[in-house]
Structure formats: structure tokens, C-alpha cells
Image (cartoon, rainbow, N blue to C red; front, side, top):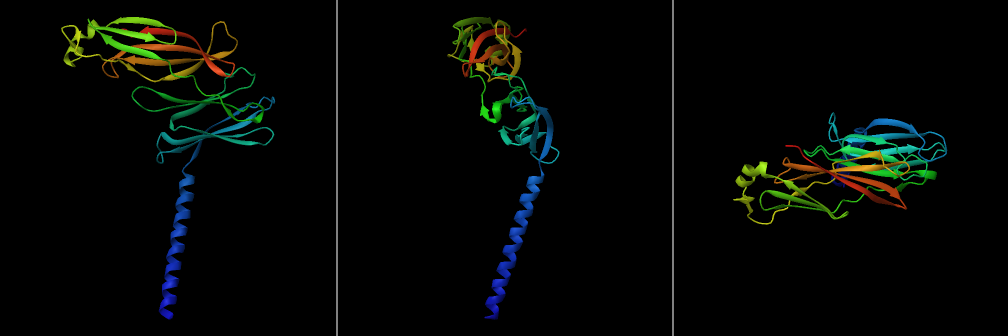
Length: 253
């Protein structure tokens, strides 16, 4: 009986230690978060400033990469909201009115840290103290491929526009890579259409208020083989993003 009691006591003791260690680890883990920056903006439309704190959890202490990013908002009438974002570097929030309801929106961004200089974006409204995701513009429909005689053809299906790019200055590189032989394609080959690298609020000609300009890069045989940049202009109306214009800028050799 005494032996059984000792075993029971020992089991209880180690279970207690495990629970204490677990609670300590959880508490320590929660402490590894910090306020990146704070804002005071009216994001509900009541003409009173609300408190916005942008929080982040670094990948490790001292790291510049935040594996978790979120905003905590306390409105002027005491309501609390939380918006979770994708992780990244240098998170920030801008407050343009992109859905044109007269209330500042929360336009958040953070750099992915990749070689392409890409960013994550998120767009929300808290008008009338109701949290709603507005979302970002959709991807453009772009066809980009090589053609014979060191030519590249880029077609924007959204506007039915096509551009031909002379790539003859890259002949030596493309021949070495086996894309061409004596000016003829060895096989049909697509170019690389990179996702949106960035968005920025801009004035849209002929429209009231701000819209967004998106920037995408088109590359040839590899990412650093830049062919040109696609600039798309978007305006939010009737509950959706509308494509206003596309501009193509060829990379200067």
C-alpha cells in the first residue's frame, strides 16, 4: 500500500511539473510579441479617432521577420476588433479611402523578403464599426511567350492588347540555355509572369477619389531576366475592383 502511494505521489508530482513547464512555455511564447507601431485614425466614420495597434511576433527574438502580424483596434465607443495579416518584413498600415464611402480603410502591407521584392497586402473597412474585408484586385490574365527570331509576345487578355519585344540582344544567353537554335525555338516556351510585386494608392484619371496601381514584372528565361513591367490601374465601384487601364513598360537594356 505504501509503495502504491509513493508511485501515485511521484506520478502526480511529475504531472504537476509538466503542467507548470507547459504554462511557463506558453506564457513565454506569448511574451515574444511586440507592438510594431500605433495609429490614431477615425476608421469607423464617427469623426472620432480610434486606436490602432499593429502587433507582430518575430520569427525569433531580434528577427526582422514577423511570422505573425495582426492589428488590434479599439474604437472611440469602446468596441474591440482584431484583423490578422500574413507575416513578413516591415509591416505597416495606410489609411486611404479606397471604397469611396467617406471612411478611411485599413490598407496593410508587409514585404515577403524574396528576391522579387514582393509584398503581401490586405484591405479592410471598419465603417459603422462593422469589420469587412474589401480584398485586393484580381490577377491580370496575361499570356507571355517566346517566338522565333528572338521575339517575345505579351498579350493582355483583359484588354486584348498585344506587344512584341525584340530580344535579339539576349541571343547568346538564350542559345546557351537551349531556348533557341539558329533563331528558332526548340519548343514552345512561356515567359515568367510574376505575381503583383506591389500596390499603391493613386489618383485615377476621370474618377473621384483614389484607386490602386498594381505592378507586375514579366521575365524571360529566369527571374533576373527582366523583360518589362505591367502597370494596372484599378478603381473600386459597385462592390468590386474594376480595371481602368493597363500600361506596359519594357525594361531598358
